[in-house]
Image (cartoon, rainbow, N blue to C red; front, top):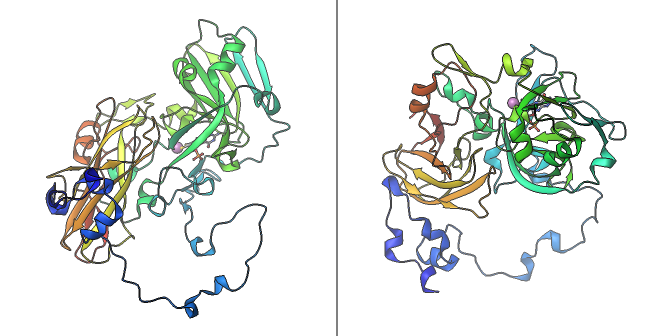
Amino acid sequence: MRDTEITAEDLQPVAGNGLLHRRLFLAQGAGLLGAGLMTASVASAVSSADFPDSMRLPGPGASPYGERSRFESGVVRLARPDTGAVPASTGAQSPLDRLEGTITPNSLHFERHHTGVPDIDPGQHRLLIHGLVRRPLEFSLDALARYPLVSRVHFVECSGNSGSLNGPKPLQATAGQLHGLLSCSEWTGVRLSTLLDEAGVDPRAKWIYAEGADSSGMSRSIPLAKAMDDALICLYQNGEKIRPENGYPLRLLAPGWSGNLNVKWLRRIKLVEGPVMTRDETSKYTILLPTGKAWQFVFPLEVKSIITRPSPGLNMKGPGFYEISGMAWSGNGKIAKVEISADGGKSWAPAALQEPVLSKAITRFRAPWNWDGGPAVLQSRATDDTGMVQPTRAALIAERGARGQYHVNCIQSWAINDKGEAANVFA
Ligand SMILES: Nc1nc2c(c(=O)[nH]1)N[C@H]1C(S)=C(S)[C@@H](COP(=O)(O)O)O[C@H]1N2
Ligand SMILES: [Mo]
């Protein structure tokens, strides 16, 4: 096991302010303990009188639908204020800083709906495919479920996520409140290309128009190439049927592209020659440049990452060894590298990427840190397998200005003070 032993060299910082080598995480637990990096207290002798109450009587039996521990009931979605402009145009964010790993539990998946959650009977619901096709088709849920299904892990991110980083001053809020219009699930459904092939695409068709069955009539135009590439008609989310708030009984998934395109409660796909210019693609979801011009139809969500631990509200308890943990993702492919800085971007150390690293999915990263108890500014910077690097806030604003709040993917900085508290700063 030589190559998993910790050497004195591994304990030397590899970047400013105490960042250690990611190799430490490949080492055995005993190695970490020997290196004085673990924080458990030493146990005193155990006697039978110490048996906990839970060992004295049996607990309740099995339950029909599982609930988490009552001690975890404080981990909830973070409500977004109802702007009042449109009835029930609301949403709620994932509490990212209270979660680990890469998959968002269904009950904590973020939700964003323009006019509330419709109550749809799957027995009555139909999906229509029409327009520039050889033969229009109508699918019941039963019919759809007989097509070959595929399962893929993908994130969904609202293009307005992290928009406050374009604001004039840093909002003091948790990582979930700042960045929680983001979740990641294993989605199961039918390839859209399978259904389009069956309908027979007319060569004049270059786009699809997708429409939801909610009262906002939320609808978007999407290039046919994406529809034929990796778009899915999803029926399941993390193994169970999609939740009502996420599109029950079926939603479109356009992996890696703006959240808005993932039309929920999908009822109709029309094949068309060009974009339809729906309300949701003319009034919103464009990138407003400093010149006053707006980019329309900007689809992929570019490479991005955030540190979720430590982060505001998750304070550190005195100097010593900590694991920095966070999430990285790219709508263009896989995460190739995540680097961590503890000195506000002056020096960087590579983080360990948790396997499996999947395309257009969240990748968990971790890095060992020996905090000396002094002030530090933590940052993460992700690179994807197309070579795109997450920009600094200053670089993103220099390129695109700060008038818009969509597709903000810049580096997030957390300032750590000498009490171990994290705050949102613009560094
Ligand atoms: N039919 C319909 N689809 C919709 C929406 C909607 O309001 N109606 N909201 C969109 C937006 S803006 C986003 S970000 C995602 C959010 O998906 P989620 O609620 O499952 O997280 O759904 C998109 N699909
Ligand atoms: Mo969105």
